[in-house]
Length: 199
Image 1 (tube, rainbow, N blue to C red):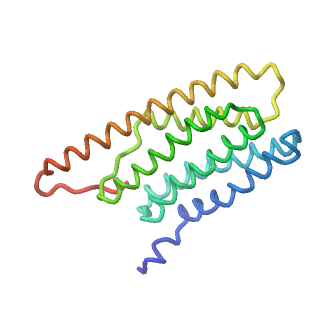
Image 2: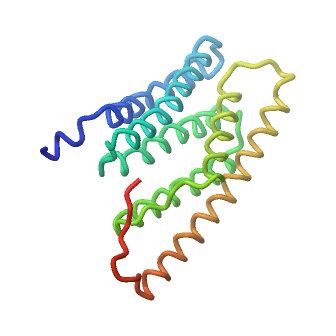
């Protein structure tokens, strides 16, 4: 099978779809200064579709053996672009402090860079439970902020976002620690026959 043929599969198609959702999310969120309820609901639905397709493409790729280099590189980048657009858009509207967005983006970009560096050594660091909790909390918090909810829901939004930011930072520190340990182990020399396993 050609290299192009290995890229053309359903999981990678869903990744490309998520990439196309990024500008749509930004446009809907910022439309009319963020004050149009219909646009905010549209932004929420766009974001939700992105989260669902992210889950689906990962499961399909693993179940049917369609994990590709393109998918391993593009998938985390597109995911960060989607969530990053939501964070930046909300801060531009004044609904989320810029320090929150900056903290999350620095963590996400840093971890994505580390993940790509690790992949270059043909080593895969599987997502731990903390990473999955982070993804769920971020999705929930951003979803609440994207929706045009009444004022009484604001404390719920704030608490959920605080939990998401906390777990985001903690899992980022843990990921860096794992990368450092792997680098140290690689420097000391892996056992004979050891190799990375793609996932």
